[in-house]
Image 1 (cartoon, rainbow, N blue to C red):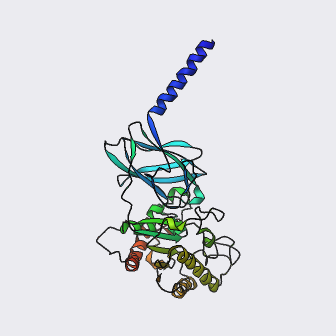
Image 2: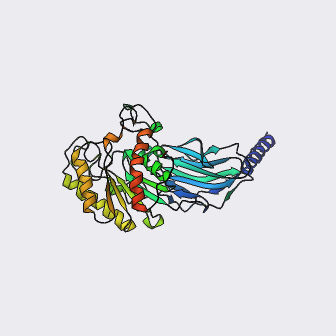
Image 3: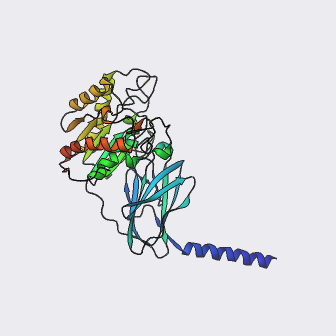
Length: 363
């Protein structure tokens, strides 16, 4: 009996060893894994991130690719291989292996996974890249030279971007930052972008707050590596944009207490000052809200931009840009609406950076 148990245990060990031999793992902090967005490395090989729009990408050889990852809740990712969308991946719960692509032809490939849901849906820890036994990571190259940082709320997050129902309730399945105006405009210029965005956040007041000033706003989150005011500070020197776009104010002037526009302008100027401390004289574009016809909001954003000084521009994005029968999903711009907002923003980005507008699709 004891001998048979020993043989059975040996068989299990051999089988486990054979399974391990069929794949190769590469640490998430491998220099050939490239990240777009704010990431914290734990020193033991893993990478943690939660801001919406964060992406990781790498080149590899092999006919399939997986990752080992975990999440505090449930995060949704779009997966691209060699520049083409191949599907979605969901990261949920404890450390597990998740297949991203299979059945690929021989030769080098590039893979990107893009976090389309915001931090409130989950923070991801990437532990390892998993390739077939003959596969390997290849040297990374090809990061775009152009970079844009977006600071925003649910509009920038792509809240409701993937539904055509204007009255739909929020659900993570229809939130898609890849279909937001921010990602669309960045793709138009062939630029990388980061999205420091959180639904319901304002400059000094969050959505529906019964008080005129909120305790925790984007002013408190902006300088953090995670979407959490208690998170470690972000190292701004590690990624410097060529232009910063601010899309905030809808929630400051939302239902609830009445906000004094002077408080908003003062807070907005503090946010621009934080951008200046981080990036120097980088151009800053200040968008009005496509979801609010409040004259006070429009005037306050314009006044803040004018008071901020050189290299800050006001960008009027009016609600009339949207057809509320076809461009709205879950009370926010859907993909069609985001394309229109991006088309309105692109000339301002071009003028601020010198990047030429060309004959390219806005998608």
